[in-house]
Image: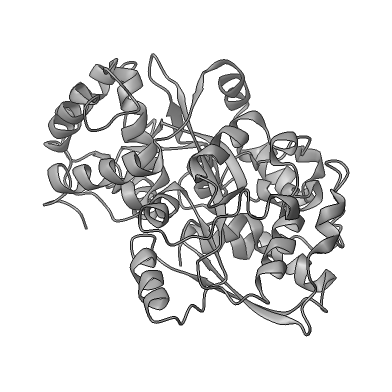
Length: 402
C-alpha cells in the first residue's frame, strides 16, 4: 500500500460529519450566472477518475460529497490510480482507438506536461471559462501562477510551496549541511546514505533538481537545456555517491525510516504525512540550504480528449464543487500536500478536527515563517520539464533507477 493510499484511508475514516457542500455555491464569492447553464445529463452518469499524483488523498472525500449531493447528475464514481509515466501512453492508445474511458485525470506537473506535449487534453480555457469560477479571483497568488503552466488544458485543484527540503535522522547525521557544497561533501563522506527518487515520478525528486539551479547560481534556472550547466555537473557528481534512484518517493521514506538511508530529498507534505503515518519516525528533522527558494507545486484536473459529450458538463460541475472553500478544506488531509488548498480564505480551522489535531502534533511552525519569507518560484514549463526529465533519465539515472 502506498503512503498516499494509506493516508487517504486514514483520512476518509475521520471525515464523517463534516459539512457537505451542495450544488455549486461556495464561500469564495458569487458564482457567475453562466454556471447554471451547465447541462444536466438526461440520466445520471458514471465518472471514471484516474489519479497519477496521490491527489485522491486530498480530494476523494470531497468528490464523494459531490456524488452524494448530486445523485441526479452522477450515479457512480470509479477511482483508479496509475504510475505517472504509464498514463500518457495508455490514454494515447485509447484516443487512437476512439475508446476513451477516462473522464478526469488528477495529475501533477509531470503528466500535465506530458499530456500537453502529446496533445492529450481538452482545452478548458477559454472554451469553458464561462462554466468555471473566475480563477484569478479565487486562487492564492502562487496557485494562480501555477495555473499558467497548464496552458489552458488543466485546472489547479490543490497547491503547496513544496521544497526543495532535506530530511534526515538526527541520531545518524551529526553535521547538517548548510550549503549545496556542504550537501555534496556530506554525500561523498557518507556514500549510499543520501537518496532521492526519479524526478519524473517523484514530487521531491523533481523539486530537488528544479531547486538546484537557484542554490547553485546557474545561468538560467528556467532553462534545463542551456541554463543548467552547474546543476547537471552537480547531479552527476552527486550521483557517484548514490546507490540507486527509486522509481517513486515512498521507497525513500521507507529507507529513511528503516535506516538504509540517513538523508533524503523531501517537501513539506512528504515530511509531515509519513511521520503522521508512522513510516518515518516523528523525531526526524528537516533543513533548507542557504539561498533557498521554494519551487512550488500543484495538482491539476485535466479532461482527456474524447470524453463523452454528456459527461463533460458533469465533469465541469464537479470541478466547481472541488473549488468551493468547503471542499478545499479537505486538502489539509494528513499533511500530504501541506498546506494543500489552492483557494483563498481556506484555513486549517475549516478542516476536519482530525486534520487539525494531526497537524498540530506533526506540523512544523518553522514552515509558516519559511513560506512567508522565502521567494516562491514556479516549476519548469511543460516542454522544458519534459526535456529535464528526459535528460536526467539519460545522463543521471539510466543505470541506477529501480
